[in-house]
Amino acid sequence: MTRSELATRGGRVCPVCRGPSEPRIDLGDFQLLHCGECGCWASDAGVRTARTSFSPDSYFENADLDRDKWDALLRRLGDRRASIHAALDVGCGTGAFLRHLRDVLPQVRREGIELDPERSATAAAADRDARIHATDALAGLARTPGPFDLVTLWDVFEHVDAPTQLLVGLAERLSPGGLIYLQTIHERSLLPVLGRATYRASLGHLRYPARRTHEPHHLVFFTRPGLERAASAAGLRIRELWFDRLHRGRMDGHPLVTAATSLLLRAENALGGGLFVNVLLERAEASASVGPDRGDHQILPEDMP
Image (cartoon, rainbow, N blue to C red; front, side, top):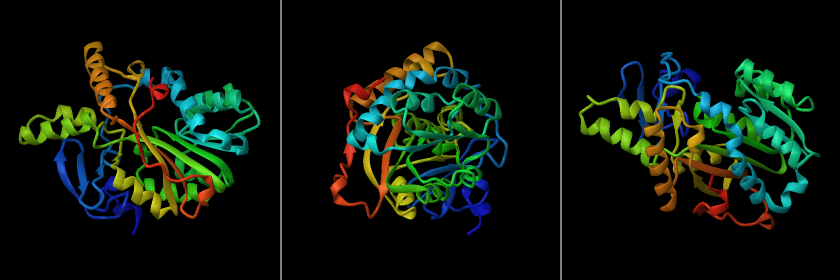
């Protein structure tokens, strides 16, 4: 299979499990394709150069609002934090998480990959001891041989047109006992489900809700079965899985819309779901001594922003 066959590149192959993806939702300047095998959705917006309907200024300017999530992840690592000597943050943005890691675990060697040249320059200037690679995720792997004890992808996986290929490359750079953490959008969350349902109920005439919940800068929308298949293809397994939500301060849009969205996400969290799905991955052959797979988790109160 070539990369051009992927649904994210104009083909009909699921970029997650390589099953057949069929066009289901036509949003005008791009379309959404559905995989019947893993349930994931893919967008061809990248290859069709569709433009996002808003500028995500609040999202990047308020990255520190995710500090609670960063601390929650480190708490989940428990005693294993002491064995983290090298960390890689894929899609590191302005380097906010890497700087937080420096403050909490100063012994850790830090590297980051960031596609946007302005943000990568900001990250490098703000943390002179971190090594920042200004390139896309797949190309950056050639410059980051590892090994790494911790690899993180905060809101990055959905932007990658070949996510399983990326996960395979990252798994190859894990140290023995290393972990990969990723946070991405959960396609079976309330907002994307409502967006797609509105499109179907209107027979395709009402496109805005589906477009707003599947913006063109996101290329893949994941289900848990899809994440499990991607992990398996990389020789990994899900050690932990939990849900959380997007902080309102990182939302862009009209205040009434962000307020209503925040209320919906809070209600979904209270019921055990969430817009974001978080997974902590380890090698499939990892010893049982590091602890069992704890499966689904409702989000803990201290994890909530």
